[in-house]
Length: 397
Image (cartoon, rainbow, N blue to C red; front, side, top):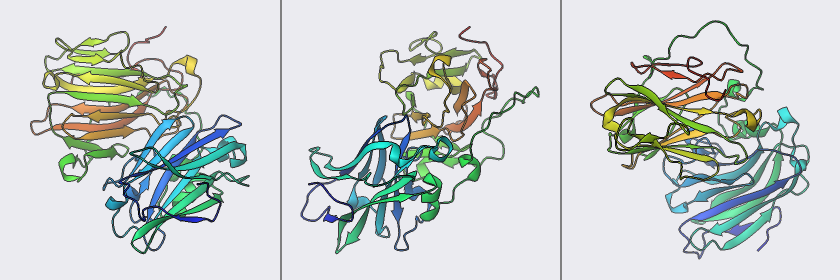
């Protein structure tokens, strides 16, 4: 059934569906990044806390009722299990924004088509579809639709209302405070001759969180945040990014218990049965994804995960392609370290660090450091766990 703007339909009434998928597809005349998000709202039409804003950087709320999924360069989805939605949430707004639309002069008029498909996740049956582009023109964001409670059930209102100001305006409208520094237009960083000291990890002033106390098996680290998780006999680290046309190389720098230091990458694949007990999974051919496996964490003291952006991929920011490292201890704890800065002038990004030396668990830290503009030298991880950018070799000369 195709919906028109302003039409309201039942979603959960007389249905046994456990989870619904709100699948958005679009095509555009110009190259653009489009982000899909969900805002969980109270009776005052506001997000009670930041965790109620679901998007690529925070793909799952603490209660697990709503989750974000990046499918392809022109498809994203929001999955909702209405039985798990907290009782104080009265409405869920689904929105679409053009990434850096104002800075790049990209508008919703540049979209050729944009459609929401509401599906049963078990059967993949399309229950409703809503072409929401309509007459949208100069706007850079759109509230696609709203899900709201009605007589103990959930209904959908096909809104299709445009917003000026992009994601920042949407967040402010729904009560989410936006860091102006994170949203300002990026400017080139001068190549400073002042050498930065090694970065201690985690920073001394940082308050650590225990994953077992968060109430969730999936945690998104904020910038600079550390978290303690259980030690395990196997770990994986997956570098993920949304634009499959772009290429990233994944590096794992390590310090063994013996004091040996080194790195695992496409040129040095490592070993599962001997030092460094780390391997890069070269059989994993998924576009937009690279994985490192730590086979014996007990043999390690520290690791640093970093990414290199090849020259052939062109100039683009790590944040724009939504680069992140997902760490899984294979014991039900999954920690995500995303990148938050607009930085298109650096080849290297240090993303996440693990300290294996603690007796009661291991410490994962989102570190987010970038190489100097134009520098192709690798980061260096030191024996004490600290690291520096721009101090290693040039890998690709």
